[in-house]
Image (cartoon, rainbow, N blue to C red; front, side, top):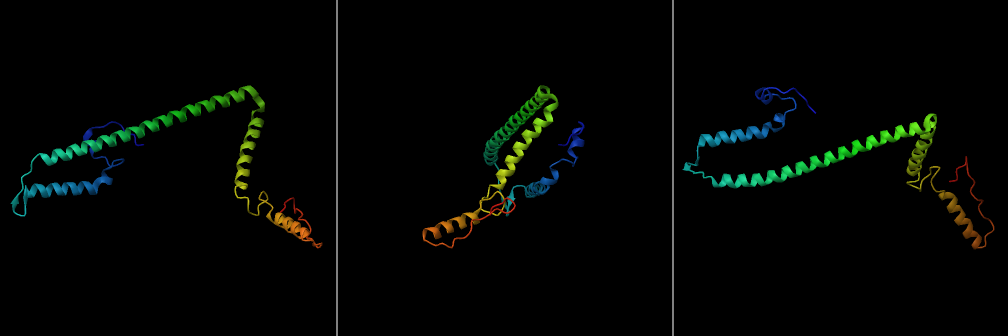
Length: 177
């Protein structure tokens, strides 16, 4: 946000920092050039005199007024939504600050310990949820697919009457794969 002291309107007209002039310069030059061409031709088009009445301008003005009305309403709705969201954020941050102060006042010296336990719970839950999000891998918390497949194979061989069964899978460093 650019904040500058209130100065004379003429000085503000030629201030470029924070101005949209550089963004609209091409369109502005085209509009001015078109106005110059219309002024020079003064209602003449291919040697014919073209008379201009107020009707096209009033129709364009009406259309433009309706369009700008809708744009203004949309803009105000966005502003109001942002204002409501900002108010909610402000109220929630104040409530959080009050709760934190109440927590410190009620448990005193044990506050860091309690905060550590609560933080551990949430951080561990987040870490575990990201680890078990994809269960078919080779990470320690993934399913032991090799052990499951070997167990199914041993069960099928036993059902078929075979006696040479593979040994059950054993964990390595407490991890069963």
